[in-house]
Image (cartoon, helix red, strand yellow):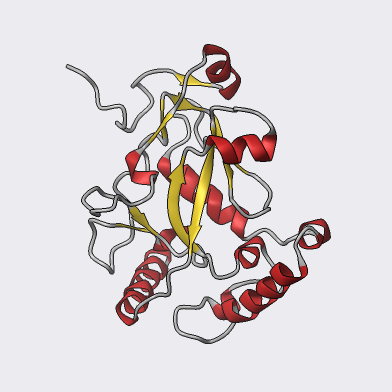
Length: 225
């Protein structure tokens, strides 16, 4: 019987290093769970406002107050790889995602956790200086909004320093990951096969989504106690 390529575990095929993928001329396929939502929303996909911790990420198949769990251990790509690189259309640094367990390869959970870690990093002066005056103004506006008491904002849960999340401006929602040869070629001047685009979109939260977010945050807090 043919094994589902997205089966979790360390005994379903080899885990390859990116240089070997490149040498073999292979083109890794992304797990559908990580890809942008389909037009008809008929396939399972992830919903996550990246302003908040990765434990608030949810599956489109789950109830609004339930955090995503099923599929976290699934491989992010087929064939499985030890690391991938993500690029954002905006001029942010690349996001290196390494497998937490190299015998398993990069999982969907590794990707979400890696993005969250990247977004919480304090920005450098060089990063800010690379932005145009208009973009700098947008980042400052986002910084203030993200730390406000407005509904759905993390407020004081974020550090006082400007972080990379602020550099996205209003585009704080995870829109999926996709292959984008043009973006990768432009950013790293190469056709690196283990590089993908992180799509960031603007999507204001509804009243019900904010209510569900608080429920997921409370459940996560209760679990830690």
